[in-house]
Image (cartoon, rainbow, N blue to C red; front, side, top):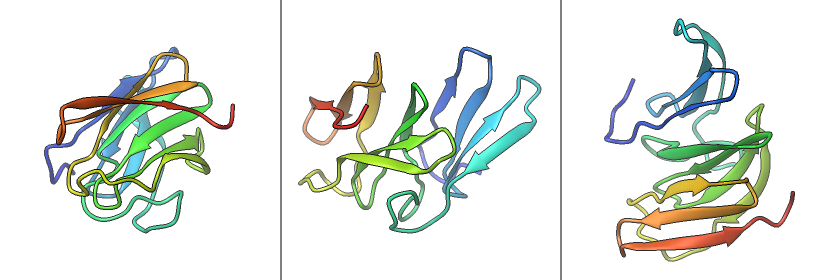
Length: 129
């Protein structure tokens, strides 16, 4: 279910496909045949939940987990590969709440976030590695 223009997809080194199911507030891991191997996420404001409508709006893979970005409560966070909260990268900010930042990383240590509301790219260094 894709109720918004946000639809993120990533493929890991084992050719597993990760998709954002924003209508169900979760990330799904699939094999190449499309079978769901597991999923995680739920609606809510807790650090390991996804708030509001159509989240996670963006995500990217990092070693051992994910960087996710949400709209509504505009926050960027690290989740482990089971979907458990690890750390916030940005949770107290003045970004436009309805505009999620697209996230990318090369090595999982530094995270870049593109903000379409102000046409800037932000750089975040992870606290925990």
